[in-house]
Image (cartoon, rainbow, N blue to C red; front, side):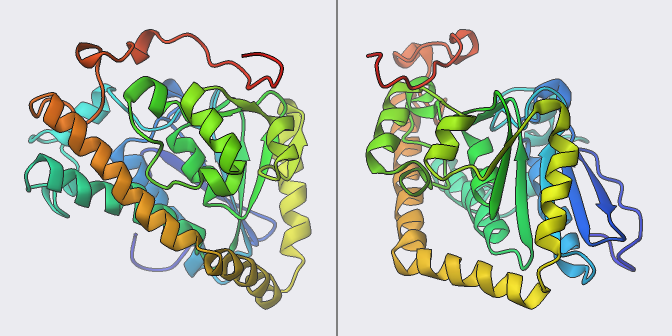
Length: 306
């Protein structure tokens, strides 16, 4: 995070940071529209910096997280040129691939790297000392669910789709921050993971995962109006509401379950690493998985269709 006054310009590469209503509302916008805001390491590190910037600013009461372009986020970046460059030694390598376990062997390295940049960062966003609103649209797939679930409130555009396709396309048990049973319910979570089917915005609202649904053309402004209502709540009261709900959830086992499921997730990576002879931490076509690059569109989880 940049040092100095909070209004010091920050040169973000992968997102935009803006404030509204005399600084009481901050909006962070994922800004890789060409890749449907797929999450490369640079974006994730900048997102943490932006969240912490908003947290440090005592004027900010509500933080909105949205995405530019046709989709909120398509999940983890699995192959863009930037993704490849930031991982390999060279002038464009991201510093995080030289530390925090990156120098260990394949299985141990992934354990540390994913804990820091896919798991613990998401838990940190959930605990942000501000009220956060996920403003989502288009496809909210796999790792995009983690960004969404880390927020306190969720606003969706009409036509939004939610899915975790890593079981059906990559042979994994779900994303690293395994909130599925809590967000979908246990039996629905199993169905969605085992089929790769999606929920639409109305389905997600019925499950309690989405708070508001707005027309896509009005999403920015209507979300801002919603944030203004939340910003009127005294900051101490708002924080205590958030803490009361989060701690109630944790008392029911949420955080402990997340820890356990992260370990299970790493077991899945270890299996594929072994089966592929160290070539891949996920299932591939050579190992019997379908080619995710040519996978058909996801289908809505229709209760009246097999």
